[in-house]
Image (cartoon, rainbow, N blue to C red; front, side, top):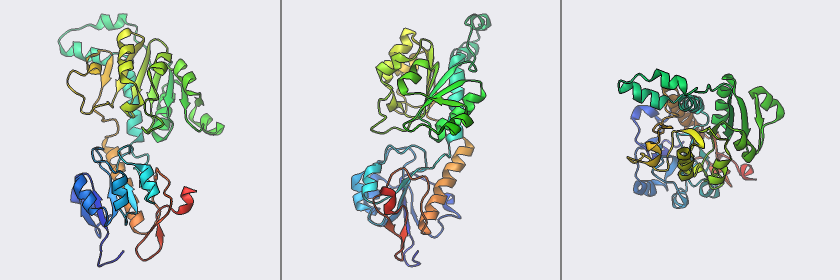
Length: 343
């Protein structure tokens, strides 16, 4: 790195200065850049840090201007606000924060599943209202999680972390994934592969753990939701766009589905009076599955270490696209993901 020209790192989120202490002390940091400011600075930025709230989009126009950029670092797991194909075409690797929040999100999935099965929302409401409806809940014969068949759609870091936890409860865990795990990995996790429709027909608890992209958007449509057995529970800790939520609401109201645990929504914040919020068999949380104290520390650490690695001339980790060519590091050498990665 040149002493006369410290590397420019542009953030599209606010961040306290202490975030960069010990990692990027030699860099010029521009925090909380707006879309217009990002475009003005893109030509000189060596690293762009994505918006943790996903409100500022990094698109083809940004990457066309980002001539010096060697890394786009997204400090979360999700990255659907980034045009990763356009970044790849421009030779820019896009990285997320890896498995930093996998444990937190997996725990949240288990919590939502148990909460829905045991009617937690209703139990809290009647108890806080001063009622003591113990016999009513006894008469419901509420199910335990343990004997249930759990289907996990998507088996990345979060899906695997969720699988381990559901297996520990004694669940029979199925999964679907574009490329199934090797048999020894399935045995180690205690899970079995099934195609999507077969998984849905068997799942008493359905857990969505897929990224949202052009291939997965709307993958759990009305037809596939109807494949779930009567009394099934849907848990979505991934992205709302994976599901036809209008069809989900209809199946919840009809009684075909016993309930749903949702941490993500088509519109965030969730509007007052939203259809799903009016249903007593839906347990809602405000997109907080991955924000434990430990997960936040890992998100920051993974992101800052990755940026430091690239600024020092190394290759980034957690890359989610396949850049067509390497970006040159200062001084001439190649940094980042080389051309072979796109082969």
